[in-house]
Image 1 (cartoon, rainbow, N blue to C red):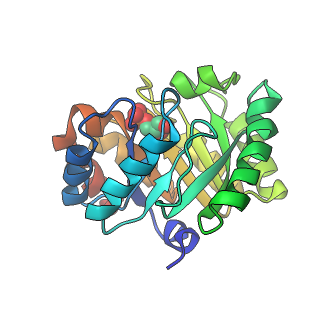
Image 2: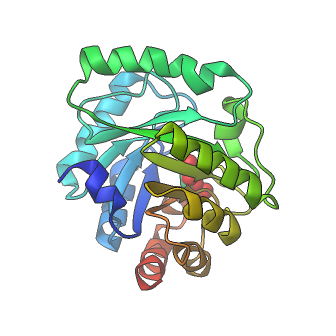
Length: 239
Ligand code: 1GP
């Protein structure tokens, strides 16, 4: 099954593994797979080189029965060992490099060196805290209180034709995207809606899952409290 078809169906849980933070990435991946995660995202904002991402994806693929997808923080995080790549454009960056500069460089790399990698064009919309992703990408995060602005971005992403929208509160964010924001994006964006950042409990995952995004991502939890992953995944499935 193609990655796009897999992602668009229902509400799934993906585990984010940042190779720069997780020396024990295989242990985390095993834990997440046993807990029932539907896929693994690999990537991060800082300090990851191509050889590293290739090795990490290859190792995780050797134990995973679910898709492994690159979530690149830079153009050096590409490998054809993965099932696909979220081809991100940070729509609310103030720096054109993160909207289209990195993308023209990444596009040539993909076409020349990784032609088999499935590319999921993704409008990356940074809200609230924003975390390292918001800071590094020079974005102007949307305040938690403004779902109307999120809706405007998601509408634009739809008209432009992105395959996915990723609502990002930032890794380790003190607060996740409020359900009203997820609802606002869902109302106007008919393709893949991904939500992540600051989700640490089953209750929070449940309220977000009720808004019917296609993917809910947790990263920090998998590193710090992997024993809670099962609770999150059950909450998503029960919503
Ligand atoms: C970050 O959305 C992801 O890009 C996951 O965030 O680490 O807070 O779970 P957390």
